[in-house]
Amino acid sequence: KTRVVLHLYVVVFILLHARGVDLAKVRSATRPFSSRIFQILRRSGRPLPASEHKSSTRARAIGSGEHAIQVMSDIDDTVKSSGGAKIADVYLGGIDTRYPRGDFYPGVFQFGAELSKAGLQSDTSAVPLAILTARAKEFKFALEIKPTHKICSNYRKRGENGWGVGSVLYGSVREWIFQEMMAERKFQNFEILRQENEREGKKIRGYVFIGDTGLYDRQAGEMMCESYPDQMLAVFLHDVGAREGGEKRAVVPQDYMCNGVPILHFNTYIGAAAKAMSQGLLDENALKRVINATLEEYSYKKDSRWIEIMGDVEMAKKCYEE
Image (tube, rainbow, N blue to C red; front, side, top):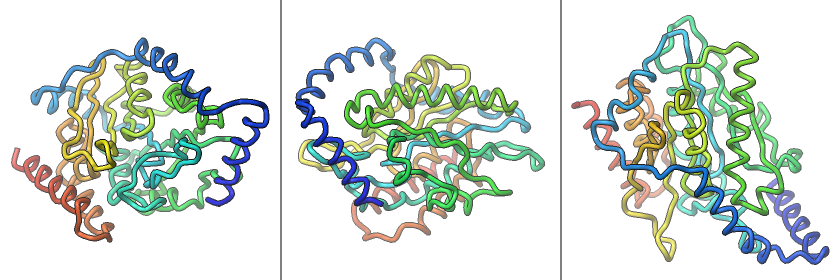
């Protein structure tokens, strides 16, 4: 399937050139315009003080045991590594090269499962996780995330009572070519999901978006917070950013508030779970289960990736002590 998709991308690129379109020039010419749109849409985020880091969403997060958290997740560089693959200077899904292309990040499935069932009564079912992806719907025959997909089966393994992936909302070829439009597409898909939940009468406590710092998930999350601050509980961003030369950043970006909603950065899903606990979204037992799952699933060399995991384990221990 990967080869088929790569061939399709090449075909699209060739067709554009056949029509006299210089893809690089078009993308370059439209980037300032797109960037300006995002500057208008987004509000400058202020740093998240330690006191707010612990309590800003706690009241809403605890909520009622009858109301569930709707977890929304990106795929590439969030659930699995893109490997930083690209064609003609256009990334095919993300920028992360730390893990092999297609490998799942340790702990990601347990984290999604824990957030979805957090605070629920034993007789209340968790709301299925929703996927907001920029993958082109035109290529669904090769990229479609079906119930039999490994992503879906892995979420089911970590869930309870048949919980797993529900709605999958796609992007289009347009966002692959003009990648600055990915944020708008994911925001539109978020609104479609909200409308679906309202029509179906689902009792939603609030929404959590999990993305990454690679390709416009930050902007998508900020647009959600700007438009629906009373419904957004938090935005989690997997840090895949790099310094010039490809070296991974030594420290994740600073967390901050966007329209009263915390934007939280993390290296590993242990770190994400620790910050979720600080926000009142997870309890200590849930955090421990994410730690155990992450350590169980890690099967690589004990290099810088392992150091990040161990660093987040220490951060998680401090959450217990507090």
